[in-house]
Length: 396
Image (cartoon, rainbow, N blue to C red; front, side, top):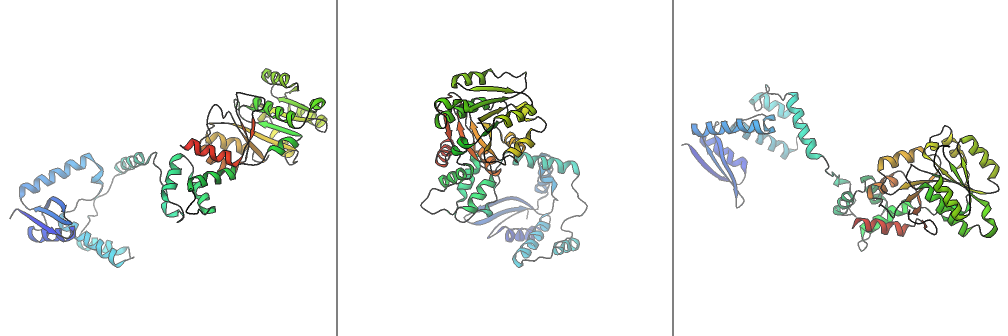
């Protein structure tokens, strides 16, 4: 007999029958599952054995299957039996399988994987996993669908923010959970800031170059003039340009002329401290801080001390589309001065889910929303409903 076909309920039983009829050196030529039954065709013909061995050698050259030990049919059958017994009886003693191997020579101990082969294998796995989203589905609350979590992850929201949402909020069945998430994150991010703007004697505006600090200073000044100082009280408000002498602040001077305000240029921290001490009780000061002077020695210590007073505010201008690494760096440098975020240039670009997530993770507070194409009457204060709607719109 050279070939034998077996039909059985499972692969283990079928392979037992093949081994019994054709012998331990038999090879499997074909395996199929038809109408719930396992159909296996085996052979002990010498030509079939030679063809099978040739195929194994070729396969070893083309993929990583050679990492695993080759076993003949009888060894495979015994191994599966052992594994089946272990699983059914829930055996916890890890030495059992080793004992079987030593007694029956199931897996030869002389074959090892060399370091270079293993390195190639791990590189392939890393390439496959690259850019994939892996979510620990077992941590999801029973009140939230897994599809919502994957949907939010796909849109760019961080797992940490989603997990906090699931932990803190219990969703009722008739409420849209995605919209609830947007409102939850908005509530964490938004802070009332209108009264703070009007009541602060000192308002520092910090941020990287090109973030719209100068335009934001002018908008704040325009808002203060409209809501706090009228008529002859305009002299009680001044704008300060805190930047190196070599810097060009013509744009700020033009805004000052437009608003009929004084613009004072100061280049050193010592002069800034002196100016603030001389004018703080008489005038409200809005200070535009250049990135160069932001790094001046002693500046952060000074602003940290000033912001302990509720009459001093520190605003960080963050341009829409600022990447998460820059956000983390900027927030870290001002973490001790109680900063409030102003999202700027929103009429030029969007702030995305990744950026909103990192702001949420860093426990930042957004107080101001601003564009760049208009100065007068274009300052908006952040509101939860507005930010939630914004997140919903950008996710469509």
